[in-house]
Length: 517
Image 1 (cartoon, rainbow, N blue to C red):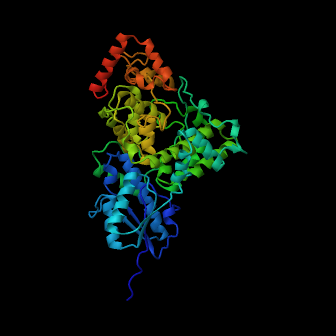
Image 2: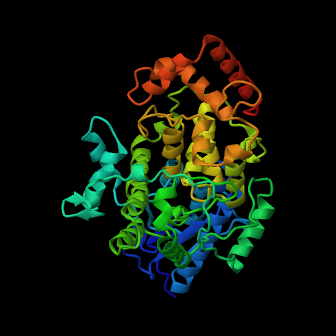
Image 3: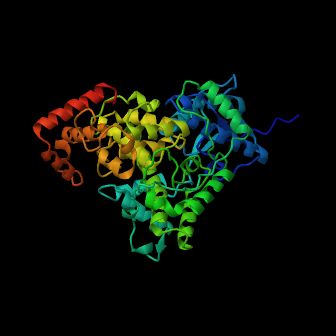
């Protein structure tokens, strides 16, 4: 009897690469190639991932594996509860290579430096070639971003975004941007009035099927001591579900997304946001199809330009930009700490047990759903950590752990760079520092909170406001001549010497009490 056909390519598919059209599948020959996927503890424990995040990845992976099997592809899939599981990607890959003896390993670019290095090192130890192919999911390649960065003295997302608009002909009328300007951010900062958001079309939810129910049971058993709840898990975990979620957003909520994208309201985690980032980051959706749908809605007169542009900027601008920052700056980027911040992350970030109403709501939503919208992340949980002086690496680890859409290439620059200013201004042109008055302006949280956003001193002073003035005082010399911070720093002149001493003492009190008043 003739020997079986030797395995030519073992195609590696990671949990954030659930795209049958990915470059790793180019030239796939069902007679000579096979697919490898593995669920391992390491990917849930290298940061203490929340149960919603773990379930999101595992359910989407299992659904994708089911689709590959239905297509007739040879698939070698290691489940998390398999007694033979080695619980690291490198360990599982080494076992698969020894058993299958492929001539070559093929994969699309991973989304995390740590994973890429681990798999490359494993392939080298095994003496098997590893071919890493370009990720076509993105509209800018890493090399293309590097060329863009090299051609400029300083990096700014706005100029990158304009270049991407021109290159991909998005929201363009000839050579000019639609409406005559590139950016409508100034039109997209409204808060809700006293009546609140009123009726908001509900986000589409997807009842867990048998595959997802099995995953939920597994996660609740295996990761019982991890934060978060799976009681409300209803995320899209297949491409078909993700497309339905996209349809619902464009048809029902995009019209008001622009105006209210920065607004917050207690007990309303979803509002007019898209909730598509997890589907995008797991590759269930392609960014170009999402962008095209938003632009088509604008050109059909169904949504205002400011809403379409504001949404598209998040995907074509920020999303592509942060990926370029990540891959051109790693691994050193992870260690940056420009503000010399070393405070530990408060324990209440893992429980939501905190007396400040805004923080309790944002963290509560995060733990319940694996989700909080971008202003809650930037200007509530992120802002408090920035003002308190938390080590940016600890803030990064929390964000990577708790959100269902968190993959390091997108999460790290947004957290360490934009939110915490840990890169000293590479991602953001200024620290996003604000007092409790910002929260009072953009939400009604302060009305139901025992702290006064106008006060920096005293037992009823808002900790955000106390820490804001302390932040400015601690970094006065650093930002005195900063073009976008100098005015804020000058406002310290209104604070008397006695007030500054009291503010500093109360700020130290907050730090000594793990961020609690």
